[in-house]
Length: 198
Ligand code: HEC
Image (cartoon, rainbow, N blue to C red; front, side, top):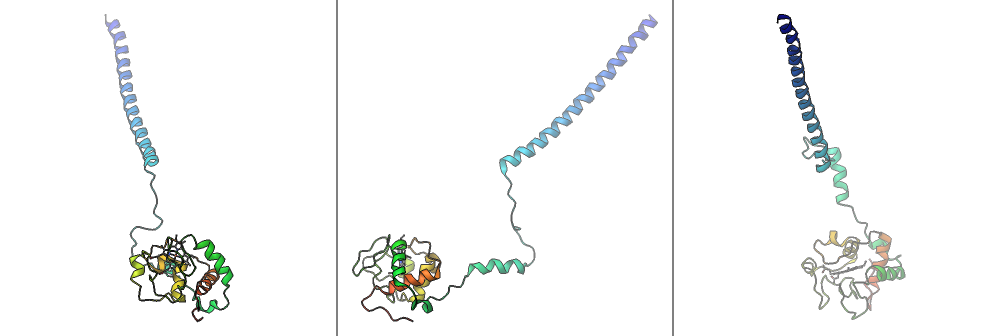
């Protein structure tokens, strides 16, 4: 009996050890699963949310004069005055450019119809928003006591929206200075007596 008991003790002890190692395995597996779940949550979260890095700090601490100067520079690009270029400008080239860039909205003949934009006969030195029967923007009507002199035309044709915030002229602008001079020389020619050159 005693020897049988001893023999019996062995397997019980072994079974106990086996039980403990199973517990350890379960704990290890639990920790591993938690780790994998934690990692995949990060990866999936990254795929779903697409975090975007800010190019500059959202809040800047302290003054940064070096970056402030180049940021301010393009905000106010000086427009080259057009008046000195008009005498040598090419009216024919201006007519061709206007035909391509402006004629979809404007007519240029004396008594021509208003289209999307007003007729432009005699526009040089005429006050803003004066063409009869055209529905001007409030922004343009607010300038009705100011003439379309050469530099006003220059700024407006270069960048309508920048020159007149709220204008209804849906045209991006003509950035090329020489082409603008040609177009304005053509506009000047749209009169029985063209306005004097500056
Ligand atoms: C997409 C149509 C469109 C194009 C293209 C366009 N314009 Fe205009 N233009 C308008 C409209 C609309 C107005 C009226 C703007 C307002 O009242 O704010 C206008 C107004 C003007 C005025 C002021 C007229 C006034 O009586 O006060 C001038 C000058 C002018 N355009 C010149 C040009 C020139 C030059 C071009 C080509 C380089 C051009 N526009 C291209 C639609 C256009």
